[in-house]
Length: 305
Image (cartoon, rainbow, N blue to C red):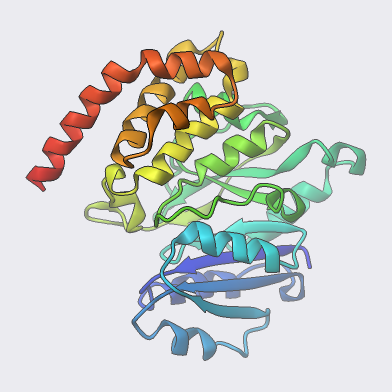
């Protein structure tokens, strides 16, 4: 099995057929990929819909879980995946017909000895009308994801095929929240692995009048402060090597770490004290006045919604 495609879904029976249709059009041999659909507590007809697709040319594995968030479904899919590579397609998106074949070809082009230092393949996204999203990827063979994201040189939306064995090394934390940003996983992975660049648009985003149709992308971040604080923790712990070159970016992470820890009603001395690097802990203490000001502003916005 070359690739596992994973989709987490919650009440998306209306858009899931779009994902399936794009997988049916794949140029990669259907014996070389599988589709894992994890239903995150849907109350619509999702289960009947997916179970009715059992005669697809590629394996489809469906399972249901209580509504606990995409990060929990992601961990479960990673453990169950049979593919060497793991790709994620949200329940309202699609991929181009050659997407999976291009990922496999790019990965197969890497000498075996070089693969140990790579997490997988990084590609681009496009809108439904074929317009690329964001600037091209860097014109280098491999990239450091953490450095480029801190410098804001990566397109806001990228797509990846990650080694499944690498993915299993970095599970999402089992936090009592519905949202843990996916960037927290990529920041941790980037501490040990680089990414192969494939500057092609392979994932297709569909947008509604308000923007992305993904529910989580529209949520106010303070509604899920535990996950947002964890995201900033990963920056401070795993990207601190860039502190001298990008001090403002790490200072921003410190402010937001404090801000979301306040929203989560965490005990700040414990949260700050558990950070890996001493200078990062000092920075978070220094950032408290700015963080508290943002926290107060957030409360005002919450009361206004």
